[in-house]
Each structure stands twice: as structure tokens, then as C-alpha cells.
Amino acid sequence: MNTNLSSLNPTKLWKNFESICQIPHPSKKEGNIIEFMKNFGEKLGLETKVDEIGNVIIKKPATPGMENRKGVVLQGHLDMVPQKNSDKDHDFEKDPIEAYIDGEWVTANGTTLGSDNGIGVAAAMAVLESTDMQHGPVEALFTIDEETGMTGAFGLKPGLLDGDILLNMDSEDEGELYVGCAGGTNANASFNYKKESVPANIKAYKLIIKGLKGGHSGLDIPLGRGNANKLIFRFMRFAASNYGMKLSAIEGGSLRNAIPREAFATVVVPKTNISDFEQSIKEHETIFKNELKSVEPDLSFTFESTETPSFVMDEKTQKNLINAIYACPNGVIRMSNDMEGLVETSTNLAIVKSENEQVEVLCLLRSSVDSAKDDLENMVESVFTLAEANIVFDGQYPGWKPNMDSDILKVMQEVYKNKWGNIPEIKGIHAGLECGLLGGAYPNWDMISFGPTIRFPHSPDEKVNIATVQKFWDFLVETLKNIPKK
Ligand SMILES: [Zn+2]
Image 1: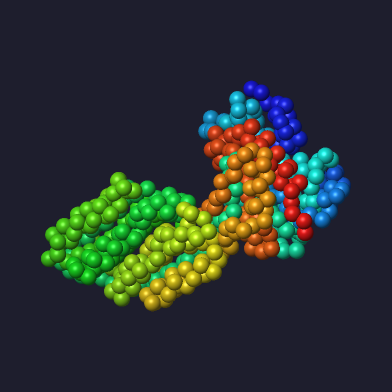
Image 2: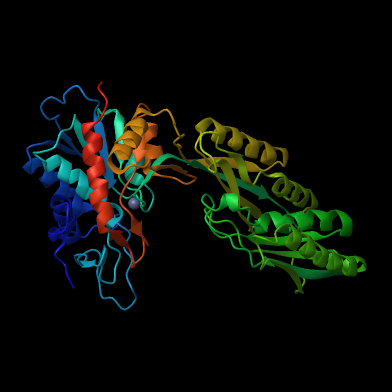
């Protein structure tokens, strides 16, 4: 196993990455690497501080003749995802990462590598210690805990940094520039119901929707996959008004940021209507399968008979709940006008769950445009207010609206074209990035995200392509040379 990373080019970057691998730095346990970065800055004689959250900021003045350039913030996150193969003996809080060269890639022996985002951090370090580069005023911003809540970016205070341009180095495909991401809001609605006794002459059923693909509630939302909550309530609205169905319990979805794959309801139906009721379940399965046939081939909607439950929900709450879930917006609300194929605003009706005389409804709203997210919040609030539910919103974080007129975007496209002949792909992502949060604290920043090619991040197969690290570094060096004047 060739573990000599400093034999690779650019040597300075790889040498720093090698040092990072020696220091355990899983998310939430960044103490050692914070200390290391602080010493690194101080040893270079640069202005260095650790903010109250644990983010490290190191400032380096412009090189001679470059003082009139706009200030650049070079940003990466200090933490890494700790994942290992089950047969690998490794303590992420104590043991160094065993990085090695495997053909065209660098990978780690049985664990995540931490090239996400160690390569970005190592690049910023190489700029800070360089004596042969040309650059304007540079500030390195090393955030903590990107992978498990972005608490570093959340907690960054305005006023600590003076730059005008943010270069985030946490993307995973060389040749792509990211210029936008989504912000988010959690919507939490709740209905309080009264337990009522189950009427006589009924039959009890368990309704089961399953076999849906689910997926990430942001990245996969434009695929138009089925939402188990929406489907089961669509049927229940029909069955309540046509067959006198009464709802006792509901459980749909499991994670707020996942499209719900399964939903289960316990209901009762008057015995006089059971054959129509059962028939209509089959009909609805056919309708659902037909509507979603190209995206949800394994969808199934079935029933089982079950024990008579001890109660049903009071009629008014049942009606309000069913109407609210049926009416609540879900899926893509609007596509971006700035970038083809990018979702601007969406929502995922993630969880509906009854327990202890309460039904909780949890949604995750996303948008790259903050005012559009506010508008969607109000829309969801209106639905649940009409249905006499309580609703609160929390966990708000800002989005990053693509700015196709961005100066740094123009500079980087030009630099790339001059050096490699083609124009990099411009992309946005319908999920949260640190850039959204950072831009919330520093609204004046012109931002871009780029990086080398990383495959299988967050898994023990994580690897970074060596040639693209060189290309990423050359791109960074050339960009810094070409930063516009103030
Ligand atoms: Zn990352």
C-alpha cells in the first residue's frame, strides 16, 4: 500500500491533507483539529481566531501589487463523516485515517477518507502558507460540523470576515460550479382529537400503502414519486364520504427529509358497505398504479382485516385532518427561472402520525428564494388554520438564489475556459449547503462552490481523484490571480 501522499502533486496541498488525516476529526469531535488549525495560523504569524462556535478564521494580507483586489474567503469544513467497514477495527476519535494511493485515486483503508472536505481545507492551508502565489486579501474560514447539522455555519456571526467573495471548496465534481442551493423550514401541525366509541356493526381494517421508492425530499422531489401519505388520505377522503369509514390510527412516513414510502391506517367501516369498500381499495390501487406506473412500479395498496380498535377519532377532527392532508401542498411548487431543471421551491408531506389523542403532521419546505419559502409557509399555514389545527414553523435556514450575473462566476468561467478550453457546468442543488447559511450572515458575498472529483463520500469507499485535485488547485491559483479590483 503506497501511503506516501506527499509524493503527489501539488505537494503542498497533499502534505496538508496528510497532516489532517493524522488528526481524528469526526463531526461533533473537532477539538483536536480546531487546535491544529489555530496553531497552523499562529505559526505562520497570521491573524487567527476561533469563534464562539469553534469555526477557525485565519487572515492573510494581499501579496505585493494585489492590495486593491476584492477580499476572498476560502471556506471548507473541518469535520468528516465517520464510517467504516464492519470488519475494520478503527476508533474515529483516536486513530489516524490510513490514506493510500490506489491507481488514479486516493482512498482510505476500510474507513471514510475525509477528502470531503479535507482536500478543500488542505487547499486553503496551502494558500495561507504560500510564498509564491499572487492573491488579494484572503481569509480562510474553517467551519465545524457541516455533516451533522451545519452548526458551524448556522452559528457564524456577521462582522468577523471582511471579504466580498466566498469560494466554498466542498463540491464533489471537478468541472462543475455550484451557484445556488435551497433553504428550508420545518412545518409542524397538530390536531387534537377526542376518542369516541366504535359504532356497532362495523368491520375493522388495516390499510397499507407500500412499495414506493421514497428518496431524498429535496434532490429526488422533481422525480414525481408517490407520497404514501397523500395517497392513503386520498383514498380515505373518498371512503369517509362514500362508505362512512372512520379513522382510528394513522402512521405514514418516518423521516422529515425522506419522501414517505409507506403509510398504514386503522379504520372501521359499517358492515353494510364492506364489499363496496374493499372493491374501491382495489380500484384505487389500479388508479394509483396507472398514474405512477413509470416511477413507482412496485406500489401496492392493500387491506387486511384487523381487531376492532378501542376507539375512533371524533368526526369533526377526522374531517379536518383528512381535508388538510388532502389539500396540503406537496412536491415541486416551482422550477427555477434562473437555471433549467433546478427546482426552486418544493415541499414534502413527510410524516402523519397519531398518538395519545393527537395527530402530528410534519412537512419540510425548501426554496432557493427566501420570499418564496415564506409564501409557501403561509400557504401551508392557511391550510392547517382552515382545518383548525395548530401549526408552528422551526429550523428555518436561508437559501442561496442562483445569480447568473455574478462577477466571480464570470471570472471563474473565463479562467477555466482560458486554461482548459471548455466552460465548466453551472449547477444548483435543491438541498441545503453551508453557502446558504453563510450568505444569510453575509448577504453581500458573491459565492461559488467547487472542488475536485470525489466518489462515494460518506462511505468507506470514499475516494478522491488525484488528477482532479491538481486541476482544482490550478483553478484556485488562477482564480485568485484574477479576482476583480475593489
Ligand atoms: Zn462536505
